[in-house]
Picture 1 (cartoon, rainbow, N blue to C red):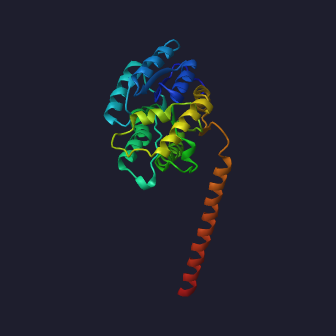
Picture 2 (cartoon, rainbow, N blue to C red):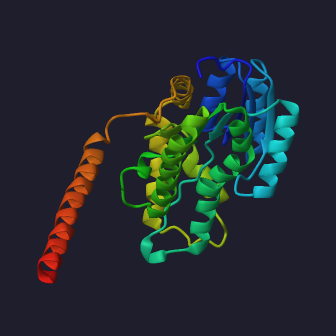
Picture 3 (cartoon, rainbow, N blue to C red):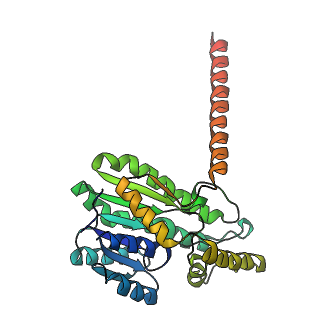
Length: 286
């Protein structure tokens, strides 16, 4: 999809962080944009900025709300045209100790990080399939390919996004639809504070240690993380080239190699073990 000019993009989490970086890159490429987010102030500011470059709609949306998503999608397509670029970017990053396992936190994170992605597919993928044209980019995380510890629910949700994207790429490629998964490392976003602000009231309170870690993580991300604008430009470039993966650093290579090697060794070992047992049974039956 080399030429993006005149296309329509729908970007969740589009008024801040990586989402806004993607929106800026799309606007510079001549794409009409609809951004969706929960924060009305940032939506207003982002829409004002982007409208200087392209046609823009801004919608307050909780992506976990399927009916609200459908209503917003209808409004976007009536006002801007058929969406052919879907950016499933909205997400939260929380931490709950396995000893304090909580269904409320699980359901909340799943609703945004996983269900929110599927709700976007429900609204825009049928049109892409009918036209045999489009591209889907979903934001996962390094935690979706490498277990990092300290955030099993976040890893669960991001592994789901990676797996969904890889599967869809196989199924949609023959239909002319590209699929990319963005796997960012640390980026200069306010995701930690945004998550704290929207965390369910029924969620277990963070321990003092976890609160300190989250505060340090927020400070580190906002001062040392990769620029969201750089990540957004990289994401748009990946769509043009129909790349399956987008990474923002190469520091996880050793861990990913070790994980893959462990899986290959287990595959060989268990295959040989099962073949040996089958041979033993065959010998006895004779």
